Image (cartoon, rainbow, N blue to C red; front, side):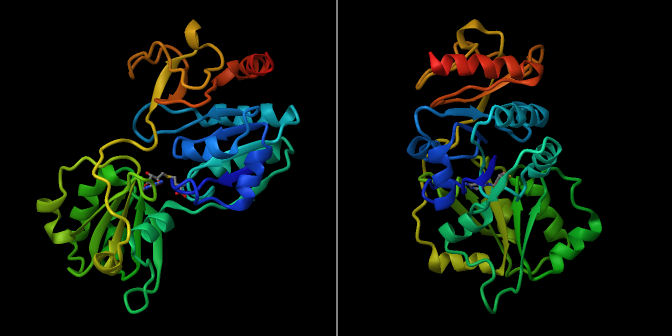
Length: 319
Ligand code: SAH
């Protein structure tokens, strides 16, 4: 079992080691925030690609339990499995659950790092995260919902000179800015938000925190987006090297919920095929199967059906 980081988006931001394993893989279990271009370039035709995405707040997510079951299922069949995660494998990912599962089942594994979104986004925005003379440290944080950070910690975040990078926090951006401004964060610390960083659709916005209401408030950011706050942000004005894309297209396709019992898709979707029927997002009567809205090679399954589905997919792929 190979647990590998796929990098933040640009399909070339991946290690040689991960590429080598992808080329040898029998099965690739991949997250939503993994470049399809990367999969298409390196995963051989004979290998299976299983989408086990999670999508914060959007409802359509593969339960972690299902992912764990699949990892075990495939590994016990003696297959070379690559579990591919966006960015780095261990930064804001559920690697711990997966490691527990692998150890419990005595499945040998390797962990291969990836370029995490903070590093990808800052590089592709020309913002050196710990530029000398500006700051001595960087913190990787999340504020995915408003009660994640305590009042005392907001005080600390407003005072520190460390660069702050917030993952999974574009939807709580108003809350972040309000908390820092209320606590009189220094005016020379600015905010950058990078949408779809390092992909061909990257768009970076920067603003003073004190002008945020006028400049960015109310804007809907395209997922994924990452927030950088600190004195270093204004270096963007001098050192940005990537033109903003003004397309509102999504590089990573949103997940859609699919009914596992639906005959049209109860098996392997081949290249270019899309589900015939997409139940409403609130239709929770059935186990969800997740597909990216534009799928290359797709198969996935959930819960107790995992075992059968795995067998069935093998059958399909041999056919
Ligand atoms: N393991 C990943 C993080 C997963 S959490 C990593 O190391 O990067 C998902 C969050 O990562 C998103 O909500 C977003 O904040 C950030 N992210 C991932 N890819 C990104 C990208 N290409 N551009 C901007 N933010 C990204």
